[in-house]
Length: 254
Image (cartoon, rainbow, N blue to C red; front, side, top):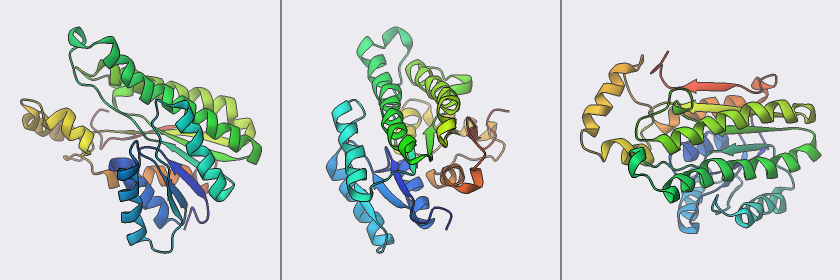
């Protein structure tokens, strides 16, 4: 159990990659705070995890990444419960699929507010706690678009380039406090958001088939395929790893 008794807060963990990461962390012995935007979805996720791990310590911490107050309340709930924070996974994110000429200012900044501003605020809150502790691990969820961009996803691509930059900058800034900052960069993962982004549009199934052919492993990923990389970066196995971006994309672009 590589994460035994460590406290982890995972944003965007009521479903998809975040839920798979939470499951993996619990298997590794961690105490986990589940986050989502709505209390009912968070409660549902917590109930499912408690059914699978009846002896584990799990709490729900609903918060919108657009709200500084709700983010601060989320971190306070974790500290009130456990008095420490060992691992922060910044996984919450949204996508916006539209040609740039039809995308509004509100659409663009809506993506930035959650994927960049929200993540930055969580990093700030996490660093404040971890600096006092003298150690901690922050793991940000990026995307293959952070290296190569994606058509009709200009806002999302910009936001994930920013996540890559925040990861590198913070790793240099806070390493002296014993805080490691890394990122996992998923490829095509069959989450609900991915299905909405690809399969829901005309020609989506053909596009997905083409992506599979481009991928060295010949398939799309499941959220569970991502979880091991997060667990590695959270654990002492990665004690000398910081500023790294792990491409967990099945070899789609090499």
